[in-house]
Figure 1: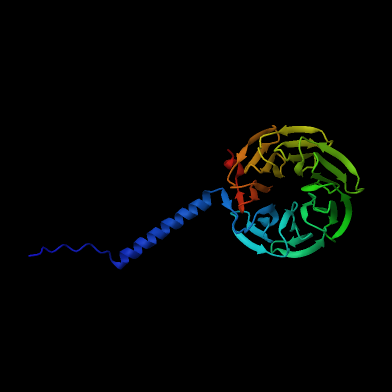
Figure 2: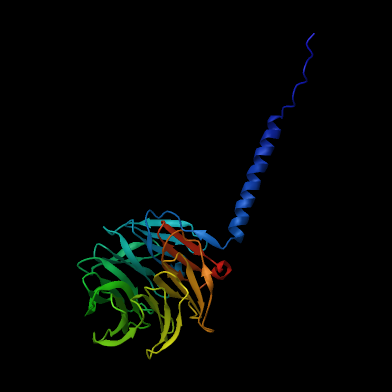
Length: 330
């Protein structure tokens, strides 16, 4: 006679439902804890490299200029994607804004500079700026002037309110290195030689040449206008006074310096590099705090917010927000 096997225990529907809900609640709790305690967020959705990034603190936004022809808007709190905005007909190459701004300006390979009203990202103005690629755009810190540099070997400074050109300056073999000072009275640009050249916007005449060991590839005036940071093709980083005396020089990066950003209090400097890292520098004591890693390829751009956050973009495509960048320093 065959012996009967006891029936295995089968859970009731209620028990199955309770278990499923419990698992879901645990997963949700874990997700919320990660969101509450993390200080690093991806900026998703880019279909090509992010060539520029800025914070628009007035609207709590991050804006990126992407080679996929779009301007992207994200939450500056957690990197949540908000808008993808088209308008340029070729890749975006650069983006700029200024303190307390309601807008950003983008440059593109289509030769145009566009100004976008925020927070909705509505095209406010389109300027036919250059005959070829716009390599970079930069607002003055007070927003009164907007500079662009193009492959046509011209720097043009604009009145952003009217779109009128203020001055045109000839520059030899530009490489996209561009900076404007606090009130838009000075513009600086690098090229194929080893000089960073500074011009007067009012007269269009050359003011100074800052010689280095390799071409200047990134530059940024400090928020108070008292100094100028310069990055070089060989990875060197320099600080110059407004009287054009070199105050500091560092050689910690092993790749090209692609972008530079000051913290809003002017005490910290962030440097994006081709060595896939972001350098963090203490300007009061003159030393490197450390580096931030995480980019899979070359870092192309970096920005800092008034709340102490930092964002970056590069090849991959890849862009990232650090709400507490010093916590990520190695």
